[in-house]
Length: 245
Image 1 (tube, rainbow, N blue to C red):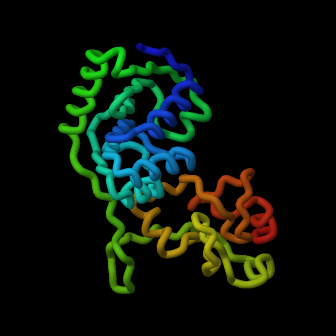
Image 2 (image 1 turned 45 degrees about the vertical axis):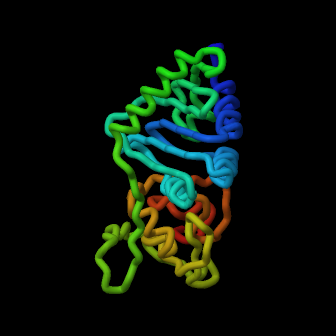
């Protein structure tokens, strides 16, 4: 049976496909940004020794935290495919072909559609999808996301040029020279030009996206949904007014 899916249907059926995987789980998507529910289901499948294969676009948008999550799985195999545009998800029983990337924004904001194919009722069609997915994997290369350990005399990570943010009234506004990592919230030295702890900076530096959305204000440490923290703008509006008035 082939079933048509709209946006919410794709999200639901994809979650079910992952959840019900017993032998294999192949996720083909140019862009990756995994929500917490998807991560939980993938982790459960990994614990059940399911063969997990993730194929993404070589020059695509990849959430570095998600990539680290995937690499820490025991049964995962990650591939980079140049010029990948297909979005296909399958296990041993079901295949989904859709316009939806495995990307949180797409699942929450975009208008998507797709089809679900049950192997038991559409064996020939499922086999064709499986063969094409296998061909995509064969044309891809194994991908390893490397994080080099930062040392005092190491030049493995290139430092970003200073943003030259003035520090007027810094101690008065924050109460000390303490700041917070905008990614993990750990307390660090207050420095708007370097608002990440060493561990998170090594991850961020691999991609170097100054506009990538983080979680916490560098000055107050609050996770305020109204403030889209980033390396470029690490301080929430309220703290910014206090610091640079």
